[in-house]
Length: 276
Image (cartoon, rainbow, N blue to C red; front, side, top):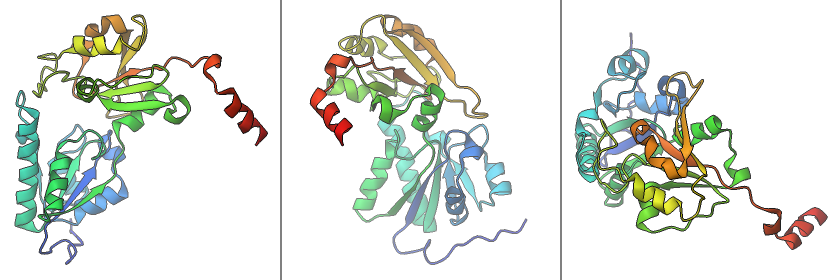
């Protein structure tokens, strides 16, 4: 198969270029035309393998020149910042060596990908030129799975540890999409067993300040292959620890907001809207 790649002066410059491409949630099905363009325009692609995206598939079907997995740098049980530093340094070294590199990651690069911040610091120091290419995020697929409109219902998307660290007050009338419930109260990345060191009890205690104990909470993981069904498990907030064995690094916790009462409406604003 001939390879007609568009490697020009744009991709090889005095300042190395890093293109971070979102692969979406369903692998091959979510790769955009823009994503494919950036996979083909560089000498090396660094990526995290998924069930449908492998080195062989990228080389044979997308005509990637060369690709290398980043998975060995993400050590199970290691401190998360150590993992992020290893990944960021690998990307920087590869970009400096080849002039440009594309990094393919699941989901959207700006949704819960901490090491992107390291790359942004490198860009600020003019060590690289960084471009982020959008991908479909887990938040997008959860909206479909749960049949919720975040604008109509009102929604907050937040990291579990950030919520606890800053003791953020919650409005129970809003929907909450809580990320990283796999590592509450710990900096360790226990990928093989997220229940290790996971302090769900602390998360539950904080949520109980705003929601009743018999309020339902839902653990969600969008299907990564067919998209026909998601993995959903529901329990009462007071029983949150029951979900521990089902939590993975791909699950998020959804809390449906309490329907606002009619008494809470701003009657003057409502009258103004109706008149105009």
